[in-house]
Amino acid sequence: MTLILGIESSCDETAAAVVADGRFVRSSIVASQHELHRKYGGVVPEIASRAHLERIGPVVDEALKTAGVELDAISAVAIGHRPGLIGSLLVGLAAAKALAWSTGKPLIGVDHVHAHLHAAALVDGGCDDDRRSADIAMPALGLVVSGGHTSLYELRSITDIRLLGHTIDDAVGEAYDKAAVILAAGYPGGPAIDKLAQRGDPTAHDLPRAALRRESLDFSFSGLKTALLYAVQGRPQRSKAKPRASETVFERSGEDLTESQRADFAASFQAAAVDALILKIERALGALAAEDRSVQSLIIGGGVSANSLLRCRAAELGETHSVSVHLAALPYCVDNAAMIAGLGCELLQLGRCADLDLSAVTSASI
Ligand code: KG4
Ligand code: ZN
Image (cartoon, rainbow, N blue to C red; front, side, top):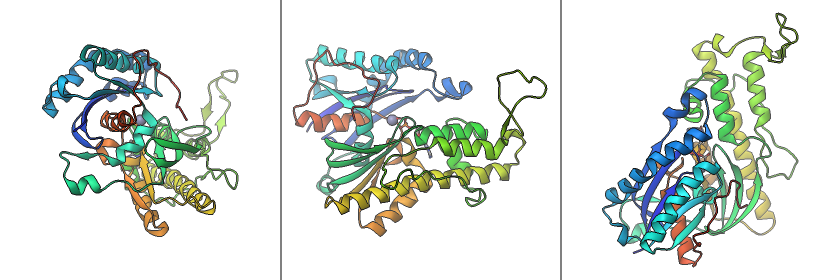
């Protein structure tokens, strides 16, 4: 059995996990920093890296303890070293290097975005033969939807990944977070809008679904965000009281909305955001089929894959397009270290280990 210790600190979650044979999660500890960033309405990088520093040691200890394993029993240490906030990445990377060096175990550098796709293969607990055989059929189409990324991939295997398209402006999770600010729905924004949308009418407001060029597999969410802002607050105007002031003044405030109006806006936003994702998945399935590269599976990961409407629509799409749909289990949608350990195991098997001079990289590899 191969046991990997995974470490993740790319943004605002300090996480460590122990995963057996790439898929079977023995422990997954996530120390979230939402409380620290809530009052700023977004992640403050300096606060994030300081909090990682305080938490990384106890979180790793907790992951080993919960899994019931000593450091000696670990086969390798995997670290999400790209992409992310530089200060945050450096804390996890330094911890992973120290553990690998002091135990003489291999160090494995893992791309955080690719790991979000592997999250769909993770299962809790032990590995019996039934579960072992339930692999995701390849080739596959992969979609990563998170606070920092909205990307479509063609996968021949979980370690052989080609980028097909990505967002040209905001990530879909970022749009959710901004929508939550406009609607004063709470922080973090995605789950708050998802919850509010349950009580609203998705047809109440006609918000844009960016299709881009006819064959484009890229995404765009900034137009949707701005359309919601204008629908809620009216057009921006020059302040009559302070005509020279640079701050933008709107006709109305989001705070004037009734609860049912807020729910209608949330539901209409969610319908438009999810429609835009489904449109590109269908377009990609069609484009790959036309080139004789049909896929057998659709994999969706990243924080927004926890979204109730996206999960529903993806399952329907699986039926209509005859692909098997694999969504990360809810605890593995948002940032976690089990996905890092899992993909780290696949890379270890291919001999793709890193040296102790592995760098933290702020941008995605593809
Ligand atoms: O993957 P993740 O934890 O971090 C990044 O790698 O960015 O994703 C966080 C994002 C946030 O934007 C959050 O608002 C969004 O995922 N999110 C959701 C839901 N749960 C989390 N968005 C929509 N619906 C949800 N249920
Ligand atoms: Zn992430």
